[in-house]
Amino acid sequence: MTDKFDTSKPIYKQIADQLYWRMIRGELQPGDKLPSVRECAVEFKVNPNTVARTYNEMEREKVVKTKRGQGTFVTTDENVLFDLKESMKKIHIEEFVHEMEEMGYTEEEMVASLQEYLDGRDTND
Amino acid sequence: MIEINGLTKKYLTKTALQDVTLKIENGGITGLIGENGSGKSTLLKVIAGLVRPTNGEVTVNGKAVSRRIATDVAYLSELDAYYPFFTVQQMIDFEASQFPDFDKERAQAMISFMKLNPSSKMKTLSKGNRGRVKIILALSRNAPIILMDEPLSGLDPMVRESIVESLISFVDVENQTVIITTHEINEMEPLFDRVIAIKNGRILATADTETIRDQQNLRLIDWLKQEYR
Image (cartoon, rainbow over all chains, first blue to last red; front, side, top):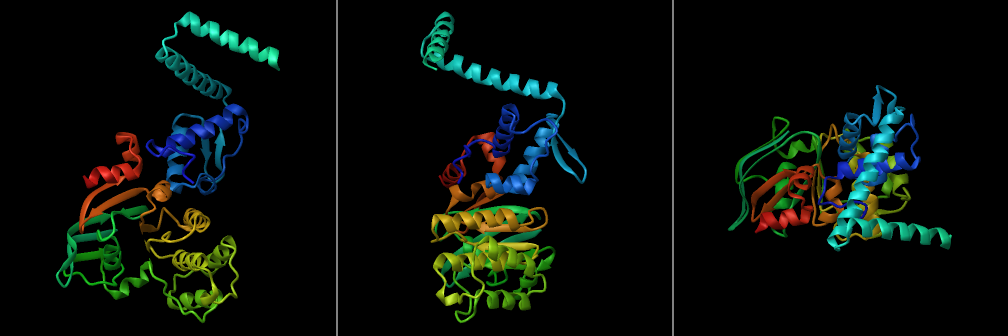
């Protein structure tokens, strides 16, 4: 049941990443209410204190807003959500580039092979 | 808060706990981990007032621990402790008659959550369902302290999962202090706020679980192995 998490890294951050992913994919829309801390803890099968920490962290990063007595909501500030998507994009590109470098590819080869892959994918569809 | 000062427990010539000094703040779930015979169960029994220290002091929220601490401390035994001729419902009614803080509504909610039949006799229940009933009895109390000795031990994966889920759903982690001994470290680690490693009757280390992950990038089992070296 812990297969969702890498337990050598802080769990509260991994839950935040999963919730950010839902926002980027549009499963959670701007202004949507997040599940309560307890509901979220049950879903991820973690200690509710960990989810409370996730919500605090997301609030500190201004991605969610807690309204007293009403719950926690996804920000309606599109700029924040845009930045979130951009930073997620950057992380994945960095990872890709790093792995390709490890394998000894040059920048030109990376661009060329990425283009080749995308072209091939188009014709296969 | 649970405060333990210079606690030693000897059984005849065998030392189960040796000069244990420990403070456990209120709230949250603490895992008490260590190998067989390290003193985990004895430590829980001392806090529950079931075993008297040979030396040292133990207080729970300022009260010296005696058998009467049962009003403040809910204790789940590793062994089965029930009347076999009782039904599940009678077992719950009995527990409710013994402890004023017993929440019957929560017990009913947990019975349906665990999909138990309240009119089944205890002696006819499977081992897994007996394990579930024990969890209901412990978690239905609004006791400030809940001690659970090996709640997952010997149970199948489905029962273990339903017990973990019920801990998340029914413990009030802000107001209740839960201490769990377990060997199922991988399954329980997302539940622990902090852990205490114990070996040969001595406390090796205590730590906040997210701090272990953040600063040492270790899974709990690897942290325990490191402390045991």
